[in-house]
Image 1 (spheres, rainbow, N blue to C red):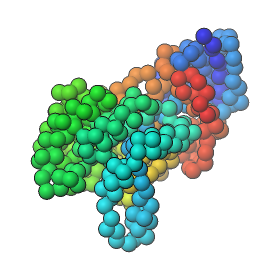
Image 2 (cartoon, helix red, strand yellow; image 1 turned 60 degrees about the horizontal axis):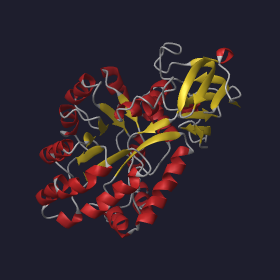
Image 3 (cartoon, one colour; image 1 turned 90 degrees about the vertical axis):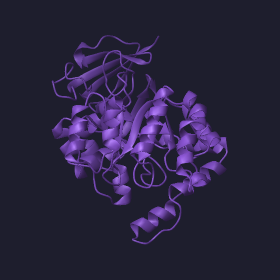
Length: 392
C-alpha cells in the first residue's frame, strides 16, 4: 500500500493535546503527517518523519483535520430565494416555508435529488468538509422519506431519519395520526437506511410529549436520538435530549440556566451543536457559545445547510460567524467544527489528525488556522485528503 508524507507543515492541528503543545488543538509547528492507505500512520516534527513512497510539500502552510459537519439537510429540491429576499428586505412573505420544499422534493425524481445532493457535497468538500451528516424531512410520506434516506445512505454513513421535521401537510388537521405514522409504518420503512432519529421539538412542530414518543420509538428500532432543540423559543427540547442521552441537542439558541447546566452535566453524552448559519440567514438571536463553553458543555459547530433558513455549506463561514458573533475564540471554533462535530456523531476516527484516525485533512493557504476567522469569506482551503485520497 502506498504511503504519503505531507511535509513542511508550518502549523498542524491534531486535536490531541498529547501529540502537540498541550492545548486542546494539539498544535505542532514545523510538522509532518504520514498517510498509509486511508489512515494516519505517523504525526510529528518534520525532521523526524519516516520515509514514505510519495511526498507532498505543504510549503509552510497550515494543515487541519477535515471538517465534520454533523447537521445538514441536503436531500431536497426546489428554491426558496423569494422567501429569503423578502425576509432580508423586511417584506411579508406568505409562501409555505418548509412546505414549499416538501412539495418540490416530492415532485423531484430520484436522479434529481441525488444530483442536488452530490452538488452540495462537492461544494462542501472543496471547503474542507470530509465527514457530513444529512437528514430526511422534506418528503413526509413513507415512500418519500425512505427514498431520501436511501439516496443519502449511498454517500454517507451518517444518515438521520427526520420524518418529524414538521407535521405533514397531509395531516394538518390530525397531527396525532401523523405521529403514529412517523413512529410506525414510516419508521419501519426508514430505519434500515438510517443511523439516527431526529425531531424538531418546537412550537408549531412537535411538543415534548410527541417528541418523546418519536425518539423512543426510533431508539427501540435501533436508531440513536438527536434533537432540534430550543431554536425558536424556550422549550423542552434540551432537557429531553439530555434525558434520553441523545448524541446532540442542535441549535440551542434559547436556553435557561437549567438547560445550560443539563448540557454541562451531560458533556460526555450530549453535545450542544450550534448552527450560526441559521441565525445569520434569519436575523435571529445568536446562540451564546461562551455561556455553554464556560459552563463545561461540549460544543460543536455545523452548517445546518438547508434551502430555507441556512443555505450555506461552508464550515469556514460558520467558524467566522462563531468567532465574531457567538464569542468563541478561533481555537474553540476550529475544535468545535472538527473534534466537536465528531463527538456529536459519536465518532473517534474523524475530527483529529492522530495515528489510526481516518486520513481526512485540509491544507489551508495560510500559515495558521486562525486565518479561517481572520480572513472571512476567503477560499483558504487549497487541498483536501479524504480517507487518504487527494479529493481537492
